[in-house]
Every structure is written in structure tokens, then in C-alpha cells.
Image (cartoon, rainbow, N blue to C red; front, side, top):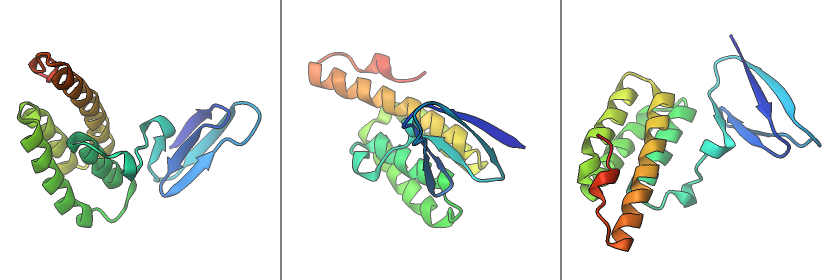
Length: 140
């Protein structure tokens, strides 16, 4: 099965471990065949940007999605998941849901669930900085 990807000028994606960028003057269409995982630029997090507990969880989940050497990352994932729950106890259920997706090897779905959590965490941080009630931002 093939995946058709439409890239804007300058946009990049990861295909497995390779970064592919549209260097042309306009849009381009890529047809990707095979079993490599694909991740659009807007979903890619660099390690230096993993600065909060949930962002670190996202980064390690992204690494699980993109790598073939998953066993080495499982221990790190569990450690970071515990740290994230310790930092944000109200997100324990959502973090558990991400872990369950990983257990059944649905890594992309786990990554998208983590992406949602990064938005929730951002809201919690903003609410804490502003003194507002953060409990409303937690997923139900």
C-alpha cells in the first residue's frame, strides 16, 4: 500500500530515519511505498524542545514510533511516564491510555494522544502561571 504526501514548499517529513524536504519552488507530491513510518514536520519534536514532563513523554513516544529498536526505549518510556504523572497527577488516566496504545503497538495513535496531552499541559502551565483553575484543562 502506498501513501500519497503533498508537501508545501520548504516543508519536510521524516520517513523512517531520513528527513525529506521539498526543495522546489512549489508544492510536490511524494508517493511512499513500503513499511517505513512517516511523520510530518509539524509533528516532529526535537530533543532540545522536550522541556516539560509531557513533552519528554511525546519525544520518547515519537522515538518509539520512528525506531526499529524499541526494547531499549521501553524502560525510558516508563520512567518518563512516571515522571509525567508525578508532575501532573490529573493526567494519569490519559498517560495510561498512551501506554496501553504502546503495549498494543499502535505507536502513531500513541503519538497523537501524546500530542493532545502536550496541548493540555500547555494549558495547565499557563493556568498555573496565571493563577487560574487548571483542573478544567485535564481530559476527561
